[in-house]
Amino acid sequence: MIRLFFGGLWTLMAFLVSLPAHVYYRYLQKNGREMESWKKANNYVRRFFKSILFIAGTKMIVKGKENIPADEAVLYVGNHRSYFDIITTHTVFKGPMAFVAKKEFKKFPFLNLYMTDIGCLYLDRENPREAIKTIGLGTEYLRRGLSLGLFPEGTRNRKTPGLLPFKEGGYRMAEKSDRPIILMALSRIDDILENNRPVGLKPCKCVVHFSEPFYVSKMSKDERKAFYNSIPDRIAAMLAEDEAEFNK
Image (cartoon, rainbow, N blue to C red; front, side, top):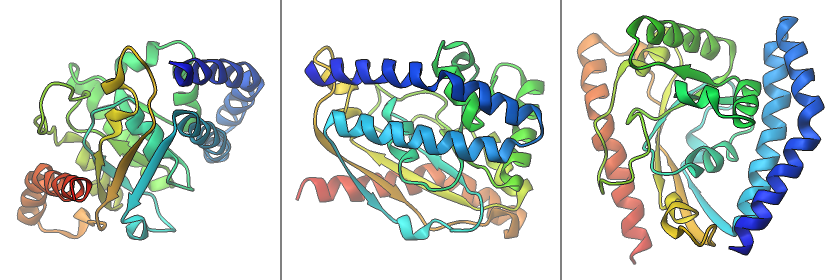
């Protein structure tokens, strides 16, 4: 409980200190300097996330970081079980990075400021026309150098030991932007918070595991379809590998 208290207090202090920065980031975005804004906001948010993981006592094991290209944006596709999925993965990267989130997050006070700062997109899955617009914008962001994280299960999977069905529409952002897809297997990240309620944050060890990059724009139509269909099984195999190492 004490870690949760200090984490909440630190979050409040960080928000108050960063209020002028939000105004500055909006100024940059309105004046056509979005990439500069994204980079500055990402640097701030990344430092904040690292401090939260320190307060939580989280030890993070990163596998496959060498697979991440140093000079181009990537569409990261992963499983989703925890609010800390975004916090942990975001600390690994150096370049600008945002996420495709449910439209409901756009209404979250305070949090929506940071999400907009770093370039997050809000997906309305119930409105196909708006979803297509979001995918088109994400394609443009990838072309411009902003990496995106996508959780195709659509929501946190808290009830099923395996994976929820994956929705494939977001994959087209990598296909149309000629950017790679890298799969992310996120293991035991829900041990940081969700598995400890109501106690709060608890020290734990978790894994962020990256696959090799897959350039889907260079695949044939049949190869691409087969790869998209295989993504849940590939992530499940990575999760099983990491879990086996935990249990040794």
